[in-house]
Amino acid sequence: MKLEKAIWWILISLFVVGSILFFFHLWLLSAWAIAHPEYAAFIIGLLGFWLFANRLIFGYAGLTTFASSFLKGQEPDKKDLLVRARQKITKLEEWTVTSLLALWQEVLEPYKYAYYLAFFLVFVCTMLFELGFWGDEIASWVAKGLMFGAAIPTLLVFGLDLLASHYVSEALSRESL
Amino acid sequence: MRNPALVFVVCVLMALFLGWATGSFFTETSVSKAIASIPGSPIVLEAKYDQENHAIVYSVFNPGGMPETIIQQAFVFKPGRETKEKGYVVSNIPVHITLPPGETSEVVMKLKTGTERLHLGDVVLATFTYMHPLSPDLYTVVHSFEMGATKNKQEKKASSQPGSSPAQKSKKSSKGGHK
Image 1: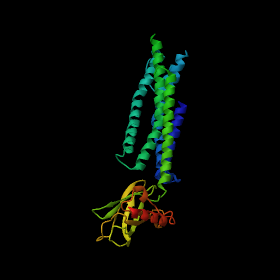
Image 2: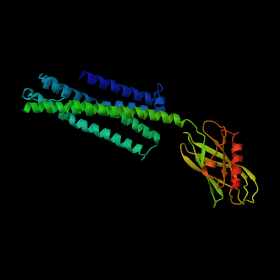
Image 3: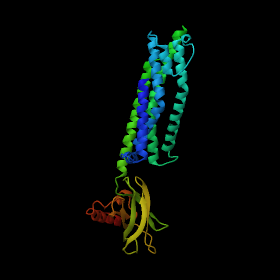
Image 4: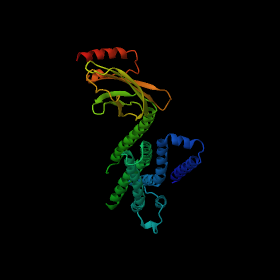
């Protein structure tokens, strides 16, 4: 939780400071970005998409950790689990650990699809730029750099999602036996 | 996905391809930026005589990354054996033809109006003067076109080797005469 917040604040402050420096033409940043637009687009894509993916990355990573430690026989703290899932429920003692894990996974689901939709739109726009439907070569470079920057957190989300859903379904199937 | 190991392998493969694509993308952009700043010397790949318009059409390839502009054409007509036309020189035909980078474009040079059509063995020695954006200097490409000559015989570029061109030319005109 602490690491998640720390990374989120570092990234958003980098983003904000970078934007301010860029828009007010301070510290040679805008000159550099204009000279190398594809590198600037890569950094913007990486920072911006990581900001959106941060909750998903840490959510799925935490879900994997809790589910795998539960499968090893340790009983995780239900209150901690609930805090990490950012949910409020009543009668916590009636909930099992696996149902809390399932709830957490369910909560992350809409974020995941919104995130994939955003990445898909960026990807499609990059393809259109690349095929030359609009814009020139520089525009296609910028779009491609943005897409590659965005692809890095997307890959992390994809992998952690697969891993977390595997462990959660393992935990659920063990409970139902 | 049943197995965490499978998830791991799939993600490692995807990360490998993503890193590969990103690395080659940034290499590609820097290389194409470097190439785009190099002006090339135009090469005449092919010349054809257009009977109807009494003009020679040159296919000029610009191998560099910068656009080049032909600003002037000049030619020397040397008669072969079959024509009655006498030799003449036409110089300084101002033109403005831009050769886009990395492409082959067609340059038309109209021969003097009122003169005879080209016959076998006639030689047209064309000089193209071009400029590129880096400097105000003028550069030339000299191309010799011989009517009826086979393709590999007529290919010649004299701008880099001015000493060798007259010898080649004389060899070629003597061969043309035997035809």
